[in-house]
Length: 158
Picture: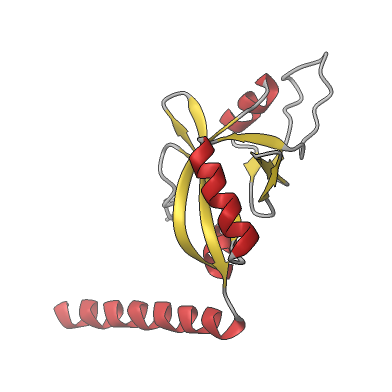
């Protein structure tokens, strides 16, 4: 028996490490500015954002470090750069809010997941505050406790 993945149909990739290392205060939805070969590679499931982060330059947001592995058959006249910086499409107010929090309050801006919305690629961004080591341990302990509680309830029902 093989386990089914819990990944929704429209989800491309998720950054599970971000939820472990940060407290996510607020989330935003941003579009991605992509080239043609990147869209083809994403449709084939060749995208990862585990080491990606968001930088701000000239009042614009960019996704830095996201890896899209190019397909061999996608394009012959373009030399693909798999980890190029990609522009995030956000409203001006959202960018100003994110920049203010990152610059003044010590927050970080991390990508949480990428998914399809209609035929567009969207990226869920989290305004995050870093966890300390004891916070990570507490989160794991709470998760284990909830899992054990659920197992206990299942045994009682059987």
